[in-house]
Length: 457
Image (cartoon, rainbow, N blue to C red; front, side, top):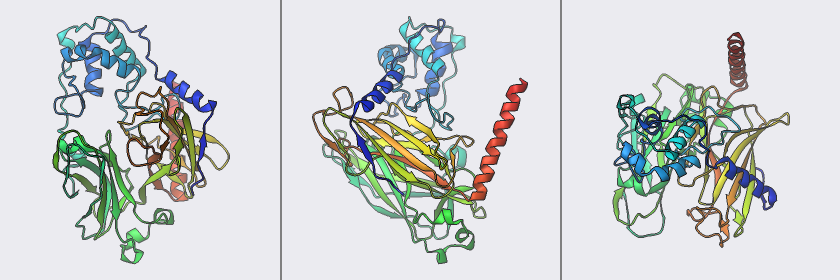
C-alpha cells in the first residue's frame, strides 16, 4: 500500500540541509603524525581509488603513481574532505553501518589523507610501498572470479548514438532462450566496453514471463503465499554508475520461466562523438537445478514522492511517501535514486508497535553515482508484518547547489537528468512467519554471544 506523498517548503527543510552541509564539511587534520605516501597513503589510494582512477577506466585521471597523486592533490583534497570521493555517501551517524560493499573512507583514513595532502606530501621509505594491486578487466564479468562465467547471457539489440543529440531511451525486448524453469543466484549488467560504458546513464531490465501456477513445477508452486502474491516478476535488475550487479543470499533468488523475455530500458546521453552499435547485456548465474530457494526476492520501487513533484525555483523541498509491508520482510540493500537537485534521502521503519527507526540515510547524494548499499547478512533489516517503510527525500533547487543547472526554473518529475525523481530501489525478500521468527532468534543469540565475549575480555 502506498500513502499520499507530502511536500514541505519551510525552515525545517533548510535546517536539515544545513546539517547535511556540516556533516560533509572538510575534516581538520590535527592528530595524525607525519604520514608518508609509501606507508600510509598508497594503501588507501590503492584500495579506495585506483579501481576507477587507472588508465582506461572511467575516472578522468589516473592515480597509480606518487607523482600523479601529488599533481592532483588539491582536487583529491577537495573531493575526499567533502566525502564526495570515494563514492560512498551513506550517513555514518545514523542507521545500519555494516555493508558487504563498503568503499567509503573511515574517519582515520580520511584524517591520514588530509594530513598528508595538507603537508609536504613526503614519499617515505620505498620498502614500505605495497605492491601494485591487480584489478579486474573492465571488459570482463565482475562476478566471474567468484562464480565463473555466467550460465546465461542476454544481450540487447545494438544502438548507434549520434555525437550530438538529446538523451535517448532505448526499449528493445530480447528473448532469454530459456526452455526450463531456473532460479537465479546472481545477476550482473554491463554496457558494451569501452564506448557503451561512456554513454549509458542507467539501464532497467524487466523480466517478462507468464506466471501461471499451473505451468510451474510443484516445488515452485509450493512457495509461500507471501512470495507469490506480489504479482509478476517486474523489474529484474537496475544498473547505474557505481553498481555491478546483485548477489542473493542463500535460500533466496529470482525465478525465470521458459519463454521469458527481457524488456530493456536503456538511458543514453551523447558525448560529442558517435558511438556505433552500443548494447547492454545481462550475465545470469543460476542455482543448481536441484536447489529451490525457499524465498523469492523482488526488486521493489519505493517512491519518496509522486509523479506530480513540483519544486519552486530557489527553494528546498522535502517529500515523503509511505509503503506498507504486508508480510515479514528482509531488506537486502538500499539504493536511492534522484537527479541533479537531489541532496539526501532516508529510509525509516515505522513498526506496528509505534516505534520509528532510521534504517539508512544518504546525506550527501551525488547524482553522478547511484550507489547500491548492500547490507551485511547479519545486519540486513528484519521487519515484521505490518511495518511501514517511510522514505523522505530532500531536493535543493537553490543557487547554493553546485549541481543545479538552473535555480530559476520550476522542476517537476521526469526522466531527463534536468528533471527530478525521488525513489529507492530495494531488494525485498518476503518471509513466512516461521522464517522470520527463526531469523530474529538467530540474531538475538548472536547479539548475546557478542555481548558475553565483550564482557569476558
